[in-house]
Amino acid sequence: MKVAIGCDHGGIKLKPVLIDYLNKKGIEFIDVGCFSEESVDYNDFAEKVCEKVVSGDCDRGILICGTGIGMSIVANKIKGIRCGHCHDVFSAKMTREHNDANVLAFGERVIGPGLMLEIVDAFLNTEFSNGERHIRRVEKIKQLEDRNFK
Image (tube, rainbow, N blue to C red):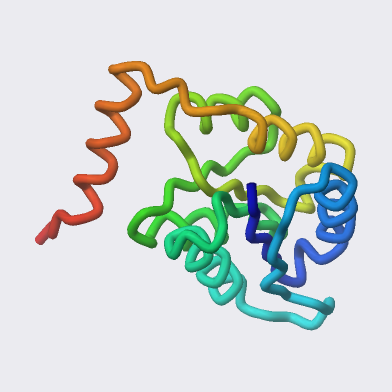
């Protein structure tokens, strides 16, 4: 598995903890930034992570900002991305199992490093259930990406 990771200035302190976890687990990753506490636009880094996932360069993506909200909104605007905004282990597991989410977003101002690692572990180690109802629902999500609402 290969994971794209990105943060804005609001998630810069948790990213080194995430990197250490990925290194210890032997999980390959690409860090798209940001690399300082200087204020940046979260949109740019969410887009970079999602680009890596959609292109197939990475299997999953992880986004960190202050709350996870902005990053998840941006991610879910990108065709082919299903981003779960999770601040607990159960939601991280269910977003993989039921929704086949390929990107995870959370907020540094909401959770600490210990809980973050449990959430990331659940997200990376839970497989999509492939149950008929879940497949049908994910297919409906994919169909929405091509609809034009006017």
